[in-house]
Length: 437
Ligand SMILES: [Zn+2]
Image (cartoon, rainbow, N blue to C red; front, top):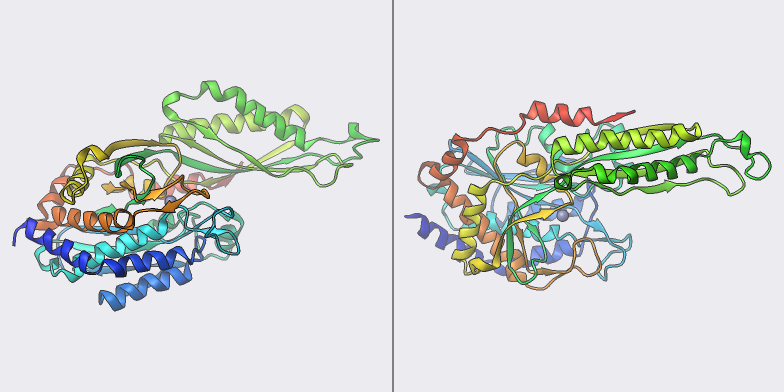
């Protein structure tokens, strides 16, 4: 069989099982769970892989999450297709559950798309003609939220890192993977897809301003006002903003999580959280150091102590054009007009798949079928074919491009490839930003 015949078989299998793929996507949509708590979702994914595809599943790979491998005994390159399990908080959304959790980042779509791609590859019978391994990984905790809960998991020794893919790298789940792919849903406006987005990375910060309490009316001179320290600190950062390079798209967006205790006592304990985001690792480090200086200066001005806890966040996402081109060509083969596929995109948010893009060639397109901004009440799925089915087919077809004919496609990409970081360098980087100043 030639490559086209294999792709046709995949398309046929996915079409024949279209309803099952959409059904699991809808089911997960209605049972959103936050990161490192995706027990029901993991169970649903594992059941599908076991019962529908006959794959052996390893469960709870990082607290939650699961993984299955096809073509396990083949020698060639190992490609991993990922889907993210977690929901996000959006209390305002009509389908949010009783605690405000929702799938307004569309991760349910990714999971169904990953399972659809798996189904296309497994049920069509093409695996024998592909020269490499393919794994399907449902990954936990992409959204960087509920930091207190994750701190508890960390203290109990259940995780080392707050991000699911960070944790999976540390646990060795990417050690034998050569390339990875996934897709994210996005409202692409008049277009259907966006291939090759770039994004910011970030370092997380928790800041505590420690002052001295005193009677706010009768003895303010005996106190040290930690709220004033925090306000000065924010203004100090604002005075720095013009020094950030435009190309770095630096973002510092603090919230005060504690601003005082009672009104007639000078605030002695004020707490802040923020990310420092930028487009490059050097940009993140540079902005983070300047911002630390500005925060500390706010404390110095009023005599307060400033404690900064840094949390390793995510790395900027890198694009691999050779992978992007394969995916775009497959979208065109599926009938998406090439002028409705946007090449490249500038996102100042962050994805934990950015970390994986520093270790191996990756593919991370954004596919439409949804309307409204991510994480908001406006987000909705408006075209299930484009949201679930098209990316499932296109990812499976891209695997054929990579692994057909002695895995010629994958080997060409891997031959000139040098990762930006080794696993050890990556973990050292994370550990360096896991500290209190
Ligand atoms: Zn997302």
